[in-house]
Image 1 (cartoon, rainbow, N blue to C red):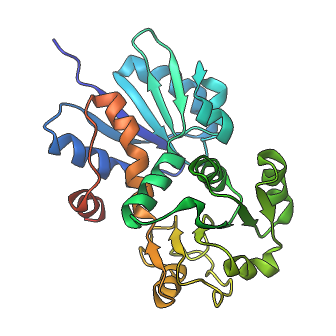
Image 2: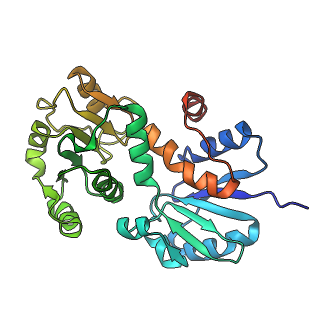
Image 3: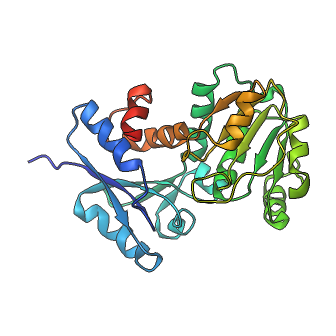
Length: 275
């Protein structure tokens, strides 16, 4: 009897995750046998859970907050990307019992930008990033790979931004949070990686008067889909790309590894996830 592959997403909390909707849509769309579950896992139970899942028929899992960094302690092989980012969001369980870790956040970010702004040219000028957390790390690596010449980085606590600058080198230049708006004078790519502007969080209050009309602006927040930053970008004539696509695209490599089918991210995918 053929085993039906199982996959899922682990985090704490996990009820908010849209990943089950996304992967279930793809399974149905391609007529594949399989399932995808949301699994709440506390930090204390993380290692035990990862060791147990392959025996329960799981072929892989996505990893979300707060486990993306710590999960690296419990795997057998870490991809170059995940090593560089220092975090993993995709685990694959091999037939011989090994756990492989990868990070597809940067891939998802770039794929979303290229889909939402087909004329985006990473080499056209500096990128401005608000925030210096885990998402910012993955995005810095992805932007550097894409050929962005300089990355301007601002975070509410400056030492956190400086730590990333120390790690990733002279291409990353730190700007004080009180002057974060000045990054927009030269930036042709603008990214918010903070939770500011998210439903229930503090508003995004950085002055946006200096947004260039030729900039591509994206916000990794996707609730709401149109944030204050994206509204300001659209009003300034910029190309505004919402954050939902990053979530959708980062799921593609894992789904392909686990279920053997490369899924497409299109309007039907977005509609299924937002339903």
